[in-house]
Image (tube, rainbow, N blue to C red; front, side, top):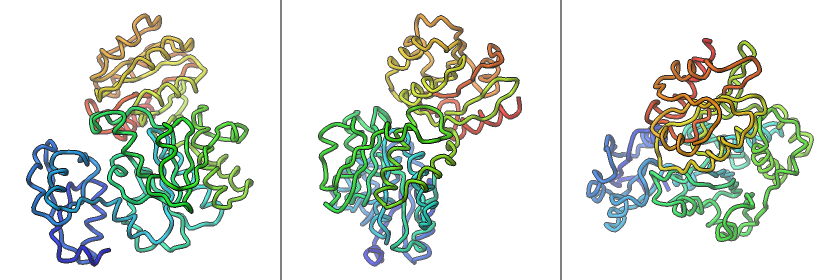
Length: 408
């Protein structure tokens, strides 16, 4: 495959984290390329991609954008770092996708397989870039990849084991509709062969569940309801059940699985207890970027609750979150932030607790939250949307929350 790239005119779009290691890899292999970066909108790239032989698309540039589609019509090969890794990886790949929980599930699979003595490589937002370790992978190793809709949309090869968690509305500033978003993930099973396996959520659309030729296994959270775990909330049972099913398919024994699950801690910014100070518990759920995980987080907490929520407006619907807030008897106060403030206020009209708005920095946000907190309360930071209005990204807002909390 690499030989096919020699002497071709190659462009890599963007110098983000998904392409930096690819560039280093190409340099080490003597493969030349140009970098195209610093565009403000996909429309600026129309016509600028047409004279290349191969384009490595960044996940941030929609596959269905005009620039990419025009280049395709001109005969340009559109590929990606993910597609190339699938073609070059010598070991079977375990791919994990879903709207939420894919990082936790992929990490837990890796932890269980490591505990069983397997050499394991974890790639994705919660792991390393796969081109950091591609040349070190052996055919007997296990490779686990967290895969987003952006990576999957134009993938023409499915992993040997596909894990598909529940898919709900998200990324509608990138995808044109919920249907396009769900269909973007279909590649994770669409190209599977009869000897491949898919561990799936039973709530997926029927047309999704029947795609591809792989054997389908539907995980059941109730089968792991008695497992010891440090994860907070019943929704994590879905992640555990999927990881357990994958591990059993690979022959890991029950005792090893249960021990690894019991020792597994919540990932950073995913419903993780930061600290308890003056009998107030602070929980960081900054990676909550749509309403479903925030609803699950509210359900997971039984103590009197102060919820910090809101952020960037990516055209989500907040009515379900509003209903949950209005029906949660332990929810005593809301701190609403960011561009979606008015939408959340509309969805929570009639809330009997205190509502605070207008804070524009993490110290201000936590000052509002702590002003109504008492011993025994929980302050939960679960934004239910993205973060690009007040913070650089979800990691930045989570890090800021943790840092300020630790200074209290």
